[in-house]
Length: 154
Image (tube, rainbow, N blue to C red; front, top):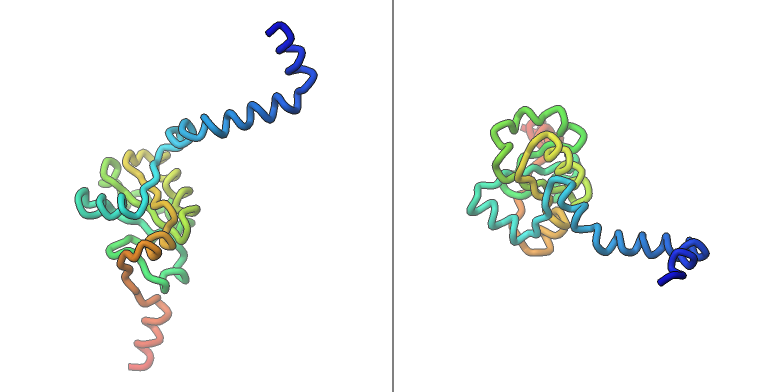
């Protein structure tokens, strides 16, 4: 034990690698708590929608909606979310599920909502890809451009 400090100094590269590995192993849970939101898999999301009347916010871009959305999801592209938070003032203490294509952008949206004071924010793990892979229903909306095209034909 007397030679431990000498070893750590002489093998500083191994010491740094050990610290990084330990931080990755044990720090993950702490970082998840600090970020202010939780992850929900598709089954958890369905339960929250059914039993807790969770609101779903879809942060994908307009062009991605042609693939389908979760029924009754509110579409707000990620870039517009910050300017529209006042629309959800009544949801600060209610469950809010956020979804994107794969779960990455929705994580950013969840962090933004948590920072704005929302207390029950959940990122749907795996996004719409996981939703579709689970065989859950999707609602196909026409995009604005498709609606315009149909109106012109009439």
